[in-house]
Amino acid sequence: IPTPAQLVVYPTGTGAQRALERGSIERYEAAEWFPDSRSLLFTASEPARPLRSFRQSIDGGPPQPVTPEGIYGTLSPRGDRILAQDGDATWRLYPLGGGEPRPVAGLGRLEEIAAWSPDGDYIAARKGFTSTRSIAAGEIWLFHVGGGSGAAVFERPDGAKAQKNIAEPAFSRDGRYIYFAQDTTPGRVWQYN
View 1 (cartoon, rainbow, N blue to C red):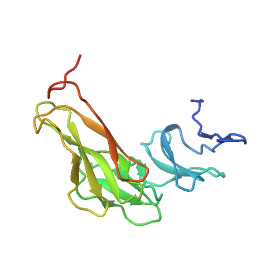
View 2: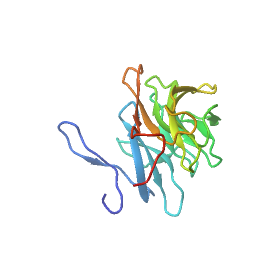
View 3: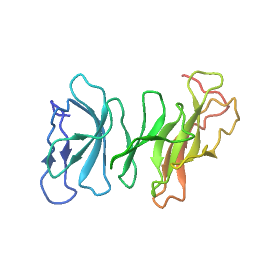
């Protein structure tokens, strides 16, 4: 990473790379494309400020903040909202076209969001459960952005006392399947080696 940090867009075919204007950005974290492939959503911070989400056009201009300070998240497939956890650990949808953020029912502080469905109507998450250790063991759950309590897609195979993790859900391109990572070592107990 160059010092100071810089976002650079590289062509996938012929063409020249393009460095994006930094503005007051001091540190970059994650970045993802908007569906139009003309803008980026990224997590960054300005000097002595907390992280937040910014939008920036690859055609020029400075980055524009799209969430309050301390709030950063993942972009919906439609590019119209960001899912992020606020300071109270409440998952909210932040509309990019204006309006107030709204909570997503069913998502709690132990959930880790990993994937939007391709149509943007569902969120697959690792739902955390604690039993005999302080680190939550996970299951894969599906939540509708319109509300509801969610539904288990894949539960802990060894029941409520299981300490093994199931995480990192990802949708197939057509949205029909959810893939995930699972600790499949023998037994129900998770151990440090």
